[in-house]
Image (tube, rainbow, N blue to C red):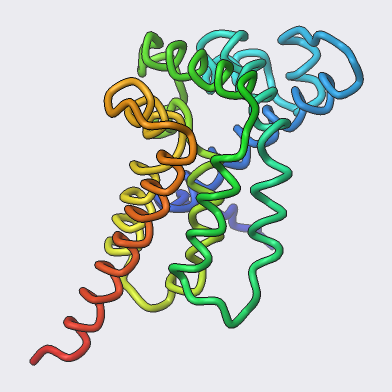
Length: 218
């Protein structure tokens, strides 16, 4: 009997992006775990712990400093944000959920802010061609948090509208927004937090209004 070989089905765009995000997360998580042990890891250490090659590490992080800063910032900021998302009740509306997330994201120490600014500088100076194709230079963790905060809305809109909503919120929270609030607008930390909450909620409200209008249209 002749056994026909099966051709490997090509991954769809969404599956490829999800796989890249999982790979990046594995690399960062490996670095966080090594740092938590009080060790200053090498590229080889991180690659081995993440079960990837050294080349793969550098596909996602053009410089090793970027990886170490990303891992440190993640270790210091992930717990409060994740706790805020876990505390959200099932009956909370999306605007309340996004506010909870934004406020948790704004609660960080001056040291974390310094590292965040360094991460922005490193990724701005990096060459996009040096990273995994189609993978953002930074902010993947933020995107995952936003998607979690807005999860109840995911099935209420099409893929394009969902992506636009997530990206819109990503523009008004995080290090880039903080730098604009502090350096351009001269806002204090509390003022910046309130501004981010206000804009994020306005974006969610606009998206919901748009979907309601679309559903009620001819």
